[in-house]
Image 1 (cartoon, rainbow, N blue to C red):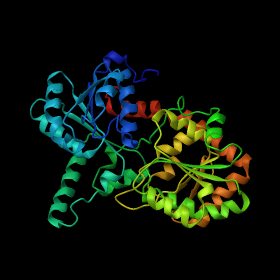
Image 2: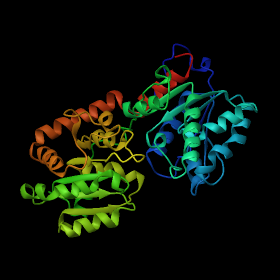
Image 3: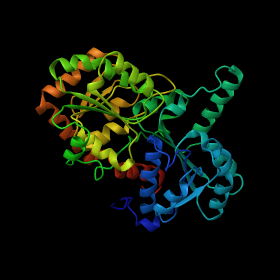
Image 4: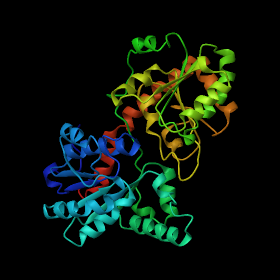
Length: 393
């Protein structure tokens, strides 16, 4: 990766950065991916970089596999706002001056550590769900206190980095100054997610020669996978061999399987379950169309949708719903199509269009990969964050 072009030699850029995150590998997830991809790039661009994260199961193996310093604190992500304080104080005494929090919930750790010699400059990412959480709604006074704590955390940040225009809007509703907001959309790794031959994988799962609609993600009601199942009968009328493949697992699997059985779609739907991280690019290449028509069910929202970039990077057209930050991930009519959530007929029309007009689908997928290469990589995300954080930008 090229060094950031900040107008000075790298060694003159004195920022010593620590990332504090509740969500970090080996646990999978969107914020975990965000944190890990950026950690690798900050390690490359900075002379001093460290990560503070919870000590989850399997952490030791992950930490041995990465080239940067990882400090594990406690055994629970919920405790990081407290357990990170001693680590930040120690890092402050080592000369670390800047903290990048991947969620607002851990900001208190920097505020306390600052008074004891910890890093002084604080930056904050924002993804979506954490800005809408109302865990104490049944206790109005307690919820008011929680809301005030969130507002104060946001106002501690020198820079706020929402991942979409939608998330930027949530920050403004919480009183954040527009001058402090730098919207930095998520990215992906096009050297990993790329077009590849998957004939053997298709053959192994009985998908050779069949049109494939793909969804990847946690099986949860918010994802709208049931809307795809509801739309399938209309697709089958013209594409009797079509197969809807779901990669992932979750609490909604039993309900989805029941819906498939009720609609007698067992021959047209495959539940693959959770797959290894290394297998995801192969599954994206199995698809003719990728779809995730997520609902807007606060606090559970789609702040951006990295999976759409992953599918595009593999040259696949995508379909998403006009909810949350998805319109920043999917450029309607250019990299994919946008539909209204909970509208099976509209979704069926979009799927039919992409399955029947292969030239149009190829054009969307090709431009999707070109877009990722030109502006949607984790290198692009890192460079924007680096310049915004560093005075030498």
